[in-house]
Image 1 (cartoon, rainbow, N blue to C red):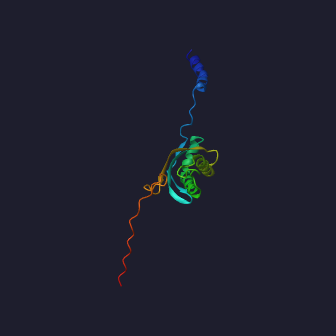
Image 2: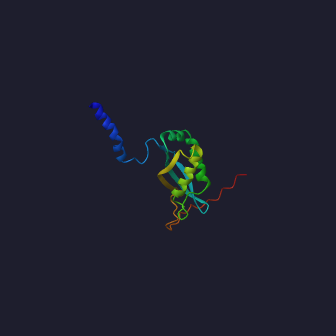
Image 3: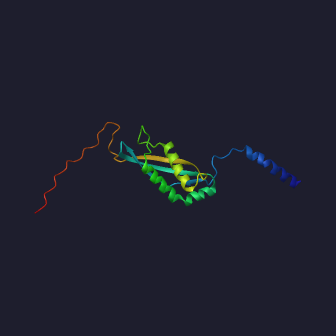
Length: 157
């Protein structure tokens, strides 16, 4: 009788498992990336930096191990990418175009570890830091004036 109960439990378990809600992602498939500091420019002039925190999502736990093994190479590719082409939105260069940046960073990671191993990238945090925090160009307030320059004293003869 006990064997029959165990056999019935084993036969019905897959039916219950199929009805259970599935998790969005398998545990062990997230790889935290080091912070990425990207220059933000407007009309060819540097206006600040975007500090970007990301996670790569791998296709499986073994794939995440391979991503971690190549982390330095992936980070190097990310840094080169954000420094080679702008990542700001066309209408607001102080905001990051996350769709464009995600496509570029995923392509970099897939090139290094393989296309089937990297599923997506998640932006955890993006923060813009202006180059001149006290200077404001958007609200019409002029930046503070500098102190007048003193003429240099002539060198003694």
